[in-house]
Length: 153
Image 1 (tube, helix red, strand yellow):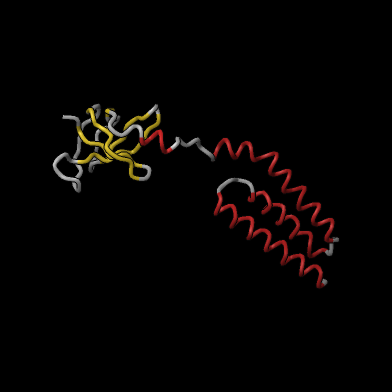
Image 2 (cartoon, helix red, strand yellow):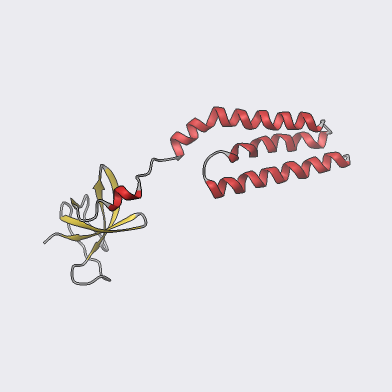
């Protein structure tokens, strides 16, 4: 194996690692397509294939993956998210629990989207209570991906 082949293997290995790390950081389904291109180029490197051919194969595989699979991956993996301002406007609204609560946890529907809810006890900010399905509750806060509600009395 030539020195050039070893250098190219290091370059393709680094390309794969960087592509995966950038994808993990951004989650935009863009840089991940360079990883399969890097893998194919890495397989070619030990056979002393000319570096220009490795680069062309790398770019072709990455482009093929991007254009062929990104629309499908985007459709399956990226779910639309509501603007945070829309959820903030829901504070004070009254909704019904969609299931019996257990350990102060239940679900509610906001704009036909199911949310996990924590049912706050009216007497204390630190305690949660259990309520039956279809109980009318008021949205009092959003904590991450959960909605804090309290029973309407």
